[in-house]
Amino acid sequence: MPEQPQEVSKSDDGKVKKKGVLGKLKDTMDDKEEQLAILSTFVRLGILVWSGGILTLAYIKLPPALGIPEQKLDPTFIASVFTGVLATFGVQAAKGKSDSAPAAAPPASGGDGISKDDVEKLIQLASQTAPSQTIRIEQGPIKIIAGEPDIISGIETSEA
Image 1: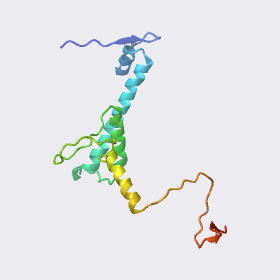
Image 2: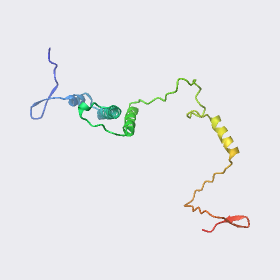
Image 3: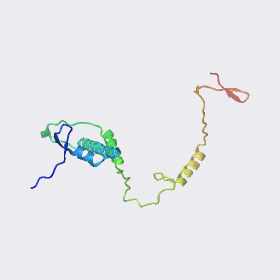
Image 4: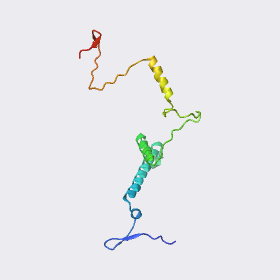
């Protein structure tokens, strides 16, 4: 088998050095932004492999012959890192629908199963059963004191 030619470079002192993978990669790309894009891809891939490995270890039981004690960990954070890195590559989890339910048109409001008409009906029913009023106060701290109000000529006042 013939040997493949390796790229070499001469240093300032005349010695011949073999170029590694990073040296070859640097020579092929002169643009710094392109080099940073490839570096960031490798970093994301490393994080993806790490988080995938940790998630896998969280759900499998290793044989006792390996001598590694079982770790009890909450995989929630690792799963969020995993899905976050996947999202940077454009992969997103699809929301599955049950096969038994018939396919329906998407709701008018774009929400998860509640249409605009449904919301309006709920508001109508709520206003009939328990009428209420919302008061918005846009001023400093308010002190609410429980007790009987003092009524003076139809105006409520309370002593603070």
